[in-house]
Image (tube, rainbow, N blue to C red; front, side, top):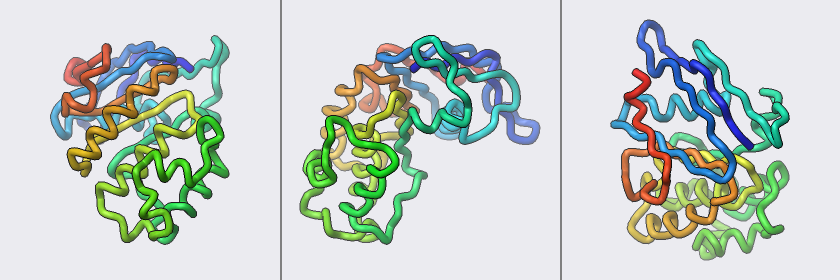
Length: 204
């Protein structure tokens, strides 16, 4: 899956968040958008996946050189971000089973196996609302890492993680080499493996 943008721009009221973004992002590569808090990284990521509408310009998804319709983009992507909510009333196993019904896990993983990969087997029967912020972030990342998706978007991926969680992230994120990986970050430990680091201030 490839994503191409031409003169992509976004503004809120009179303020331009970014302007004239021309990019071609290809499957099997990783791209990190860096900049201080409030610089527009999250807005750019959400615009690239169609959550926020562009003010100007175009975004094209293509699979094997064939265009993908906007309404079908969601089928090919998965996202993890601190601001995305989990269904708090479900247990971890229930949440994974629910998610799997819409987006299968890689290698036919079962919810129990995914609990183990997330180092959360001890909490599989606990409701999400009882999880710490770090545990919730690990669930979000686990869903992103292990779901069948051509595009993986990670916004501030180590937010709320302790040292063990950061080490777990760094080990797993390197296994996404056959997918298109987009990261929004201002923490080098989240993207120091990434060959394509882009400062979003270039589009101000």
